Length: 501
Image (cartoon, one colour):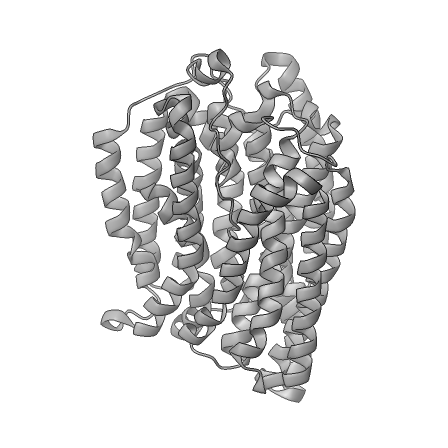
């Protein structure tokens, strides 16, 4: 629980402090993107492998290595002397999270008997919800208070006591477990995926500052070829030893393939929105971190409220229509926000933002909570863990891609308008442009959702709860006989699923 809380807080705490980092270290726009995208990229690249390493070498061992590395990387972030060190430390932090996070729910799954897992997953959902909601506010408070003159640095240093506590508790109370027939590692697959993501995201992030050189377009154009080679290699790996990084047969399932597309595009929308939003409020409108943080409270409350209602009341009756309604409602909130930003300009107040934020939050809550179960609905039980790991990986990939696209949809507009209008109006116009792109992505999400099953099947994919909330469940694809013998799945209740933006 300690590790899960720390991970969710760290994902959500950083955005609000980015303008302070920019002012303190003179960070460029590209550096700001990498501070967030670097974590997501490293996290995405290592999620599935992290779960499989836990299967092979022991979940307790990988958890302790991950939480130790995560805590050390947090210290490096907090004491970073320059933006280069901070970006590198964020990459390391994301990589360590990829080792730590997959083990969390896998350990719960093998530790507790079926009749107790429902209560445990309910507690876990509460902790995850608390971390996601409190992260932005905690980041605002720590940055605003400027403790000991450290400015933004306490948002990372706060992980040190929490991480040490998690390490001590883990050593004392966690029981070691391994999968009896764990799959082998696919290091070639990991390297190919990582290289493909870098070839796509690096030019998008650096292209604007470099003047969009030819090598950037060549790199992005070669990315599909590399992923085609990856697919061919995964087919070979499947024939050779049955241990591919990605189970390609899953993509023959229409609902799963569509759900992966939804998860990817939804991650893109969140990556664009949250980074542009915080820069708009602080650099454009001139608000303090605390002012910006408190403005987001209605949004967080709306997400949590709609998430609970959608899973318990709406989805059992209306199926995928709930998710599609969420996309439409979120789009309506975006349109309201565009209208208000245009009408009030620099004079807009927090209370005027409350309505579009609540509408957007309600829409997001209707999507994020039931999405994983909808995607897993038609997945065979023996592949539920791998499928859940892929879902969460694609969400992180989408987030990293969305953060990279901020250069195109936000900073490019600001560069064009800044000389004529000044920073305030330029950021307002850039933010409105970014929102139009988010709206276009939501339209794509709505259309792709038709591939999801009209009604969810009860009890399918619940063996994969270890990946449903926060990380992949590759570690539970072959548990110590628990899921296979009793067929009960990971728990009787649905844990709260929250966005990591």
